[in-house]
Length: 305
Ligand SMILES: C[S@@+](CC[C@H](N)C(=O)[O-])C[C@H]1O[C@@H](n2cnc3c(N)ncnc32)[C@H](O)[C@@H]1O
Image (cartoon, rainbow, N blue to C red; front, side):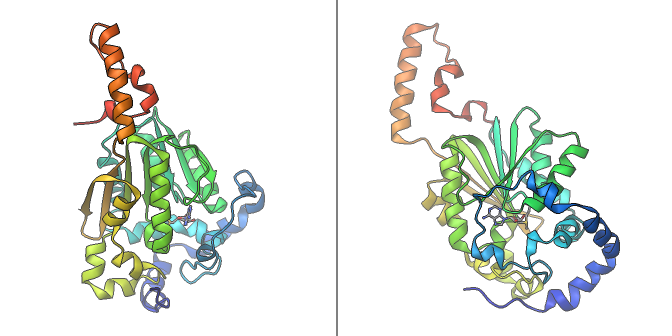
């Protein structure tokens, strides 16, 4: 159940944040960018904005992530909203990675702060950041270029990405679920499952649900429309329903959490694996070459202990 946006952010937090950031400077920056020209490089006509998204407001601003003012102020504001330190919180995603990924997809990547860290942690991997806002992708690409990182930015809906089945070893989503209806989160989890290879991992960084459930006022601090629904959402059950196993959640600095799941090997895959194993043991010196298992598409052979 969604509740009306509350006033605490507007009355208390927003003035403090406005004091901390250079709002006028950011406004000038927003005006200096030709958004149409820049975002046209990413914009795809087949991407349809869901209704929950079109009505989303950030700091009360209509248009949400499609408003230049929101886009340029996102990073300067967020650094104060992820205590104790934004980089430390995002590092929790990197620390939770158990696979040796060749292809990584960051869903709802926004301005790409986590996406950049993923590429820095796995420079050999192909990293893709996907977002519904082509404007956010303009900022993300700018950051990646400045950092000398080769990342692919894709305009798209995390519910239906159009990437082929089993095309990623790792799929991540940070700070996405707290802002979207839980039915959409469920659809995204199913999409993650479809996109992952067997043994692939999904990682979700978001607000700590336990803390949100225990502390009523915390939900009031942020004006997000779906935060209450997110707090009540049974993430593990939904992940399980999507097909994920080996589920775990870890508190990150009390206010955040990282949740992990693995796409398990199916009965069909076990049969396939046994066939490959028999062929390999008959035809070679007994060593299993990962290439022989290529059609299983699994990154588990690179798994960390
Ligand atoms: C709070 S921001 C998080 C951005 C980034 N992941 C981060 O950690 O800073 C949420 C992002 O999700 C995007 N988003 C919301 N719904 C989406 C969907 N269905 N598919 C793709 N992106 C979506 C928004 O455009 C926005 O950039």
